[in-house]
Image 1 (cartoon, rainbow, N blue to C red):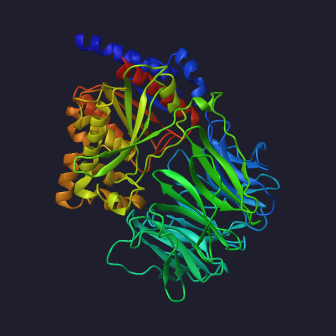
Image 2: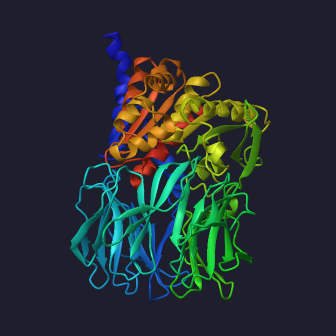
Image 3: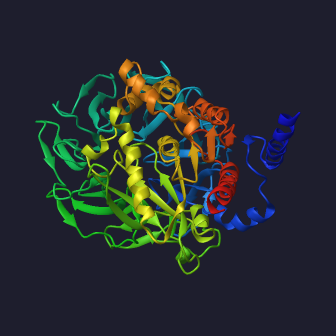
Length: 640
């Protein structure tokens, strides 16, 4: 009877939270969200962003995705600053989309269901708005790319085996024309480009972040040949395109370099020329102008994405566009040869769409996404921190500090760890997290520990295999630095992260239990062995390269030893676990077993699971509930 009475408050608390939550959410341990909290945070829930998808091939008009209801949908914008006209109205988020080249009479776009990432391709007809399913409705179909003639479309699909990314070709005007072009082995294949005469496909074979290869595939027969030269050292190729004359390939590569450089590969003699040898940063992406005379490319400079322009023939740098300080991505030239579209974001501005006129040097803003009525001037600018870790390795972090006038004295801090692990924390717009900074006075620090992208290929490998816990030790360096800062409260520190960052959060809760107040794990790995056994088939071998092969007894023993679920008894502080039921990357079972282990050890854990989400929450109503619950968690366990 006594045990029953003790559990009654927990049951009532769960019932109260569940009563106010949408039916698609499973809510355990989360207190009721008050009307006052909803009202106070309301403006911070209304941030919007706009992502460029493609130019109309004839008109100076573009296709973007942005959200006006619950999920991002396709919109047309006919002029800089023009109204956004919605063209899709589904309940699921729309992914990549392109107008048909030459004509623009229809759009092909990608969409999945419930966050499961089994994307399907659809045709949206411009004249009547009718939508037609182009793929089988079951397999995973990605990377659709139109031929230059605007007739055919190439893409990869797992339709044949469920795990291998084969290449398929179709005429979207006739879905019955869909055919398997070539069978491939593995889940890392992607179509990058068509040759100017549409006779060849340029295809990437991704094996790991440090190793990939470029291949040519005959668009008629499917015959494949490897393009990139063999090397005793692993080489990674990323972005790649045919030269406009069809005689060469432009690509990004770390061949003979720590960084991804822009190179030119001659198709006749195999000669390789490096075009950005004077730039000691990664070239992340590039696009050629329609006439091939200019290449626009983006460099990752300490996390900032910088736009560069180069005259192709002589490799001469052209004057840089004068842009607001921020991160540039997603380049595409209009067929008119003058307008270059891209996305730009900064600490003061959400993700928005701009274009740059090469001829006049004019910068135009096509979208101006809402900030919930908040003044962007009040948003905090980041500070770059560089530190020497336990073994002397230089690591970095990005710190956002609350206004000391509004919040005097030492402030609590959240350490937010990126996923990947081959990701990178970059200075950018904080969106909902501006509430934590501006209303709660919580500082946020984003580490870039070993294994992060952007700092060279050697740095990328320093957490692989048996070196996995070295990245967790890097966090100790970050925590020690924070303890020395008078504006930070060393007694009120929290950790959070998603995906691999979720594993890092759990590992930190184990290793630094005496330092941290609480932690949040979003779709995180709790046991590497069960993760590798249960992640989707098309991902498994790719992840084994990074984490280690659990089929090897020594590696399996190591992975079991470092897995947080096996050390749940050491997590003494409150934990919040968030998961999507349909996650194909980090399965639901990873969160379920972590929550079960924490409870079995007598620990305190909140749990939030969305039945209609995957690897993170994409629908606004779910993301809103998650963030409001996060505020409650920090108020109770970090601020108090």
